[in-house]
Length: 396
Image (cartoon, rainbow, N blue to C red; front, side, top):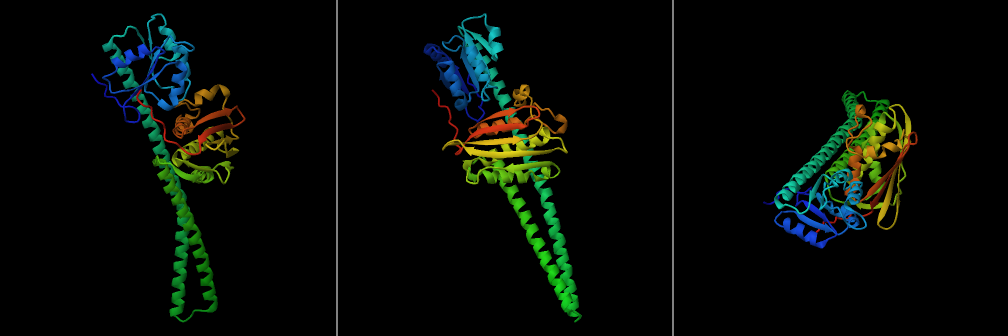
C-alpha cells in the first residue's frame, strides 16, 4: 500500500521523525519505506524545533522519552510556533500510562511500541489526510480572501477613476461647444476679438482640466495594474519601500476619504528591497483595514504611522503604529488566531491578521504585536532586504 497524498506545495507529504535512538529511527524508516513520503529526522527535541521553519512538515512522529527535553515539552514548544500550530503530532512510546499527558501537550494520537505495521500506517494515513485537508482549506480561504481584496481594489479604483474621467468628459464637452460656437460666428462673419479671447480662455481651461484629470485617471489605472499584478505574482522584484507604502495607501483612498485618519509614511527614501511586492501590499493593506475596522470609530480622528529602518546588511524592520483603541494584553494571542474577530458586524472576517502572518512568513520574516487598551497598536516586522528562495527539506 502506497500513500497517494500530496503535501501543501503539491509534492510529497513531509514526515518528521523525532527520536534520540538511531535504531528506532531506522525501524520507522523501514516501515515507511514503501510510502511516497519525504522523511526527515531529528535526534532531539531542540533539533526538531530548529527544523520547523525550514522543513514545515505535514506530520510529526515524536518519541516521548528523550534526554534534555522530552516529547511532551517538545510538542508544546512546536505548537507555540506559527509554523507548528496546525501540524499533527503523534506520540510513540513503550509506556501506556501517559495518554492524557500526550493529548494535553497538543498531540493528536498516541501509539505504543511495539508497532503493528498495518495499524500504524492506517492511523498515519488518516491523520495525514486530515492535516492536508485542513491545510488545503486554509489555503483556499486565504486565496478567497485575497481575491476578495483584489475585487475590492478594482471596485475602489474604478469608483475613484470615475471622478477625473467625469471632469474630463465635462471639459471636453465644454471645449466642443466652444469650438462649435466659434465656427458659427466665423462662418457668419460675426467673430469679434472678445469672442476669440473668450474662446481662448475656455480652450485653455478645458485643456488644463483634460490634461490633469486624464493624468490622474492614468495614474490610478497604473496603480491598479501594478497592484493587481503584484497581488497575483509570486515573483520578487526590486522596489523602494516608501513607494510601495504610498501606492498601497492610494489604493485605499476611497475607504479613507470618509474617515478622519491621517497616514504618515516615514519610510526612508533610500530603503531598497528585492521582494514580493504583493505580499508586502497584503501586509500593509490588512494592517490599515484592521485599524479602520477595529481601531477607530467611524467619526474618530486618528493617526497611522508607517516607518522602517535597516537592522543590518540583510534585514530591515517595518514598524506600523496607530493611535486607535488598542488591544487588551489578554487578547494578543486570540487576535492572531484565524477567524477571531471583535467586530463581525463591521466586516471583520477574522482572517486579516492570519493573512498578515502568512504573508510575513512567506517573505521569510516574523513580527511582534505590542498593544494595550487605549494606547493603539504597534506591529514590528523583521524582514529580509532580499527575499531568498525558501529552503526545501531534503530526504535524509
